[in-house]
Image 1 (tube, one colour):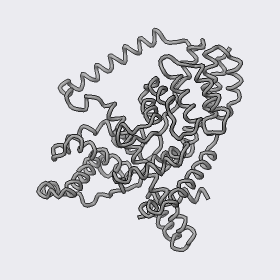
Image 2: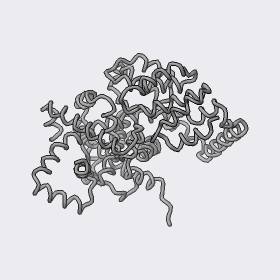
Image 3: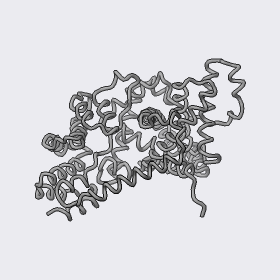
Image 4: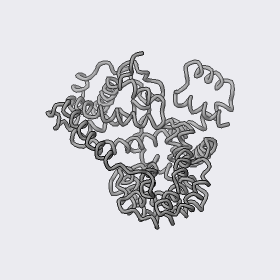
Length: 244
Length: 192
């Protein structure tokens, strides 16, 4: 059934090779059930494509903000090769600074810093007008831009019709990633995510384990990490090997 | 072996879909934004309008690459400029500024244009997906629009297997289908 759907989507997306497409169209003529299935899925495909366009537009607004003033052309007077030299100098400086001050990944803080990376942001489709943004959307945008403190505030106020686990998961992420993390609240939020049936349970466990490591509660961290059967397996093994 | 140009690399990444395509689109956007907007400004577009046309052109280029309608016959940059020009002429036509159109007409007839979402339909589509709830919107957009494979979907949502991702996608599609079928006006518009 699902293979058939994959085939239909490839057909609707125009992603079939010429020979496959001809064969599929031949089958459509002969097989009424197939023709009906295509017609059932066509609106789903079209609606999702259009929603994807909205998402991509939203992404482009984010890229637009990242471009900054250079794209206006005002800084073009500066010779291009000079940008390369400047970039190399900056990279060299930071590399040197990092090399001198690099953390040795053994203590709890260093382990946490090595393995913590905020979960990918939620998809967030922006409304036409800024004043129509819900707290969840504001939070998602801030999260996408790495403004985690602002994201945490917005997620905390979010009363959108979202499942609790989703809001709690991302609020916990923002609380962990912001400049002054609140691990206590993050743990209790992650526990609620872990205790209900949802797509983020294993990820919640991973982040709880990281918090326990930072608190030097290694036995609890190990227990959780050993319970992860498929999530980030390579990192889990590497992390377990470094725990005292 | 000849090394790929940046443009060819971006093209190949978009063809492959998934997370790499997202990064490739971002590179293309940042590399071409100024050039295409300046190109449209020279043809009479205001800054904001030029940006809007450029962003539409990015969507068209992405969808045409995905659908195999553009196979890298010319450089990605030339194609993007061509699409932007085509979209700009269409806007001028809608406004019936004929003298400008005559100046602009040329090799624009063979452009394949995917269906673009009309502004007035945006809210209907948003409302439809809002009703889906949970991670369904994300699963469907990532897998259908961004062509993420099931492994990437499973990894993105931390599912323990691709089969779980496949089942979720199937259930989400069924939910969306049911929602659409409850709204005959949207159904007929999506089928048209």
